[in-house]
Length: 459
Ligand code: UGA
Image (cartoon, rainbow, N blue to C red; front, side):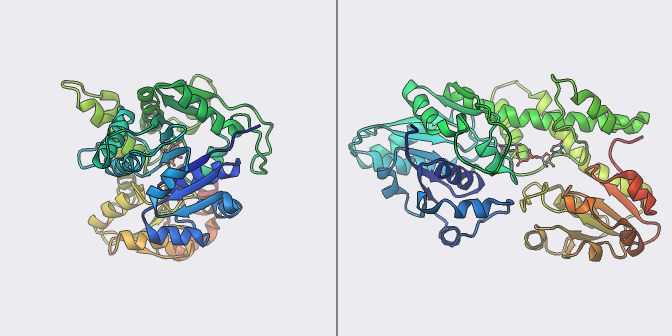
């Protein structure tokens, strides 16, 4: 028998909503809280504030097990656990800004002060926070309790980092590679194991993944290690991409093919084949922010320079510039040239533009005097609002390509692999050029259509 918990999730962003919907799906009673009234009223009408294939339908199936409110305080009294999933944006010095987490923790403290609970409230940090934040949250809850009473608050703190990818967050939540929980008490670890039991045992009903079910590793550790583990995971993945991008640049110099190299090294199980796609580098709301936060944690220690992380970032910044130099090599001056960006979101299956390479590349091209046109299957409107004047957004890929001296694949949406290349060639300025920033298209097919192809890491 699975124990049913009453859970509150604070922060209805991607992580909060996916966590809330998944916990409701496995049988818990969930209330999602967000101070943004507009967002909440959209959610109660079934409208999701981000793009993820299939998530809207999944959310709609939650029924009364999933509720929404803007009122944090009353809900705290009713629940067994609170998940903090508010955002921790990057501060000016690269460190994570914890003000949203702090506000929630203080409010919880104020509500808990003097309230007589049978069991301690378990406060679970899911937001990505610097190492030591678990203790910081405890301190703030006690501060909040002192503001209105004697400081007595019955609670326990845990860290439960998320490893959800945008675009497939729901899938990652229900079928994770592992669940990690850090806490200082056995009681907390046991409660979280009980909460996640249906996921750990893969015993919940779903048609989302037909593969045979295998139990999910449940990793328990102390608070600080769980917090560091999240940063280390993202930093390692970012390092893997910067590593293959460095190799890709060397491949270009010596006349080797990075695709074959990545395939061959990836078969070594110590290396693994995923996250070895070379191209214009990593972006999004997580890798840039988390690598910056980890670097800034390191710089807090006198005399320590995180050399590997510094290089990982430097390689990533250089990759974006390679797009410009590839265009310049072929087209010479970019003044007055029409350049089409295919894909604007930071990766496919999301409309997220945070740290999207498209905006940086558009900015650089614009300042070199090029006329930039962009197309994206879902992020077109959002781009128009973010970058007025810098690039013209159109809503049809062939319209975007008409008259273009060059096209750049910035995001590897499947739609671009299915482009009618002959039609594209006939619409583009002659001779047409394609710079494939994701090595997503087949070079032979592109060249067969009469388009010059320039990828990353080919001799
Ligand atoms: C990432 C992690 O993959 C998640 O595990 C983590 O939970 C999440 O950050 C987070 O911290 O919230 P996400 O940012 O959604 O997820 O995107 P990824 O699919 O990891 O891609 C990140 C970037 O790397 C994208 O810009 C992508 O285009 C790029 N990438 C990825 C490459 O350039 N090459 C690759 O081989 C793979």
